[in-house]
Length: 78
Image (cartoon, rainbow, N blue to C red):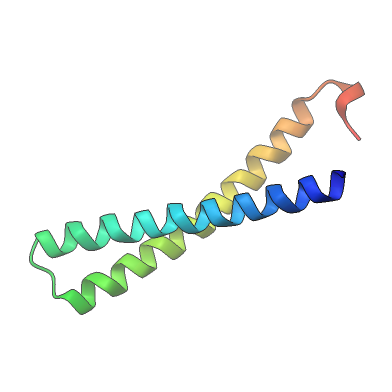
């Protein structure tokens, strides 16, 4: 049962990351198009923004998780 819950949690995290990164890409694309950028350039920059968003937030989450773990009471650490 525990493994099924972990698999479901991982799938949820991955699908959420895809939705969040796609949202970032669309916001950047729309903002650039509104400001007169060529569609090709807006797509490229939107993709770069989504990729950077994904990498930066992954690293920040890992740092946050490590700090959270270090601050946990001893009995919760494993």
